[in-house]
Structure formats: C-alpha cells, structure tokens
Amino acid sequence: MTTPTKPKLKTSAMIASFAEPGQKTASAPFGEALARLADTDQRVVGLSADLAKYTDMHVFRDAHPERFFQMGMAEQLLFGAAAGMAEVGLIPFASTYSVFASRRAYDFIALDIAEPNLNVNVVGGLPGLTTGYGPSHQATEDIAIFRGMPNLTIVDPCDSVDIAQAVPQLAASAGPTYLRLLRGKVPTILDEYDYSFELGKAKVVRPGNDVVFVSSGLMTMRALQAAERLAAHRIDVAVVHTPTIKPFDEETVLRELDTPRLALTLENHTVVGGCSRRSPPPWCVAEPPAASCPSRCPTASSTREPCRRCTSAMASRPM
Image (cartoon, rainbow, N blue to C red; front, side, top):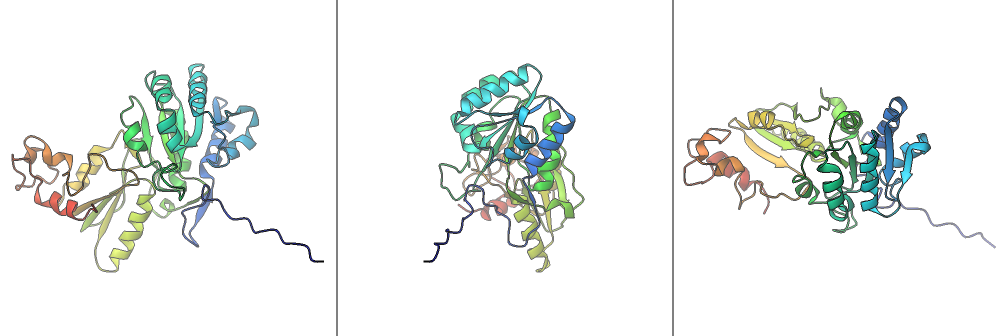
C-alpha cells in the first residue's frame, strides 16, 4: 500500500513577491532593518494586528520578543496602543495592511497620532495594486486618504535599498510617518545607481535628454526597466524617484520638468486631481497659467487651457 503524497504547498498571494524570475532580491528588508535598529535603540518597539508574518514584522518579533506586541485583529486598538507608547517616549512601528490602516483605523490615526504629532510609524503592506486578492486588499486610495492628515509623512519606497535606509530615518523623524511596505522577497534595484534615501528628497536616479519619468514606489523599478528598453531605440530617458510623497520635493521635480522633454508620471495608487486627459496638471490651471507652468510655455493662456507640453504628456496617459 502506497503512502499518499502530501500536496505541494503553494505560496500565498498574500506573501508572493512581485520580483521577476532571476531578479536580485532581499528577504524581509523592513523586518531586518527594524531588528538592527532595535539592537542599538531600546526605545524601538513593534506591534502588529495579527499580520506579523505578512508584514515582515516577524523578523523583529523573533529578534526582540520582549518588545513585540501582538494586538490581534483590532487595527483601531493597534494604533491607539502605539500612540500611548509614543506618549511615554517609545518609538513604535505598527504594521498591518494598508487598506486596514487607511480605512478601518483612519480616525484613530488622525486623532491619536497625527493631530498630537506623535512619533508613531504606520507600516502598511500591500500598497496599491500589489496583491491578487481584489479590491478588499488593494490600497489604491491610501495616499489620497493619508495626504490630508496633519503632520504625517508618507514614504513610498522603490526596493529593498530604499526600505533598509528609510527605517532609521523614519524612527528619527519627530512626527508620524506612513510607510508603503514592500515585503517578502523585495527586489534590489537602486544599488546599481548612485542613490541613497533621504527623507523628504527626490533623486534623479538616471539622467536623460529626451523624456523624464517621475515615479514613486515600485513604479520606479518599472520606470528604470522602461528606460533601458527605450535606450535600445535611442530614446534617452531620465528617471526621477520620489520616495517621499508628503512632504513632496517640489523643487527637484519642478526643476526636472522645466525642460522641453516629454514628462510622464508612474504611480501605484489612484490619481486624484493629477494628470489625465480630463484633468491638466495643477500648474496649468493657476492664474495666470503662464506664470506657474514649469516650462514657462508661451502657449499657456489666461483661459486656463493646458500648455502644449502638458497636453502631450496628458495624451500619453491612459483614460
């Protein structure tokens, strides 16, 4: 009689990596960076709402079990407790999925953390379209929700390099932060470029003379891949990475846009009030438009019509 074979376990879509086959990756860069930080700073604590394994918080939990707090499936309690810890001088990192942080616990984050400007670091997994579990787990509107909170810094890292370098800077930041977490086997991209994460700053990762991509989060990886492919067609593409969404580094981005190059944005979230065929960029609808258009385009008029350069950029955006 043969012994029945056990079915082969499949990787859950909740923890599956978006890395491509053969791509260089780092395992759980957030958890590893947080555990290292806690080695040198006794104030660092970790909390999770029954999702430590799925937000890489388990690495911190195993390294510092006495400073890890499992709050159960109670996101409001998670952030309320984190606020209390920050009140007494601790530096909490509280992890859950982005949808749960932005939807279920919005009021608690706003009133307990953002308004009093506490050093609580909200860590949200599955930002944007990074899961196959449908809209219940796709945090496409998390940036739109969190941008309105006072004092809250929003960070959207590209890869494992960004995450590892961001964690200690988030802890050192005086106020609350929101990290759009990439977890599991996270691609390592930016180590091939002269790049270092700096909170609040955008970086020109790749220079180019024909087109400029302004991107954030994992879309910077896609932007760099597209730039390499376009180079084969002799199209020189610049890539500007904006890991800090709020406060936004307008100076760097507008400097890169103030050229004759075609400008495109790559974003992993719902675009609210941004470029689209129906909505020109905000600099085109200022009064008067010509005074604020980055390209100082003479076609911008007082009738609030977008300039020629912005119109071409909008035409390349999907509906």
